[in-house]
Length: 79
Image 1 (cartoon, rainbow, N blue to C red):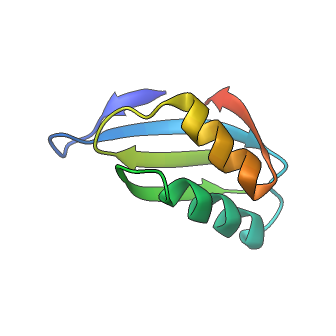
Image 2: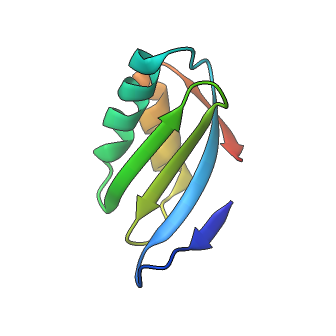
């Protein structure tokens, strides 16, 4: 899901990630995705496997996939 938020010039995208099971997993994924240029916030939720990313523009999914892979998890796709 990708949607414009109430803040002009910001895009919220929700991704589905497999393999998260705890707060440490959430932190690892959030930390890696936060390094992508243009990302302003990341919220990972292990219980649902959803990662919500707010960025200035739509992100290249391959960059998000690479960040999730670097954290040791698998990006399934958009939630």
